[in-house]
Length: 120
Image (cartoon, rainbow, N blue to C red; front, side, top):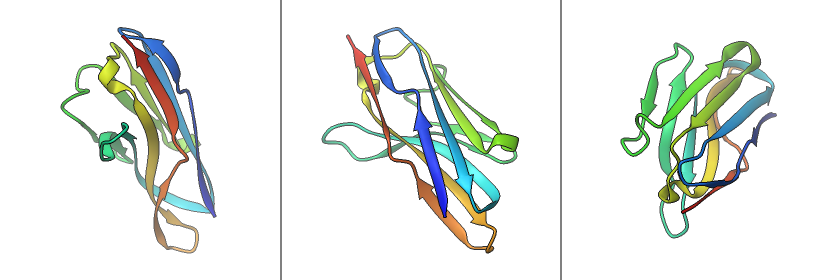
């Protein structure tokens, strides 16, 4: 069993900052990549940012320059620092991880989601 536990969502005013955390635990052999997706009401889930075990990063164009993803490989944890937040960043943010378990099975795992609300 593998679990992702997210934290750090909440309500913030436009222009403010929030930091999301996601910790993976369980029968993990290796994590290939972790990332954050978001889903706003009435919209499809979209990639926000991801980071590989080699620390390569990708960002959605809409968050470049405002969000920073980082990871702690020793703790199997990924962080998303969100600055200069806008009302359009309001969404449920989901952590995602691609990993190999101790049984050498590849899994893609999702967290339960954390709500970020940006008031304008």
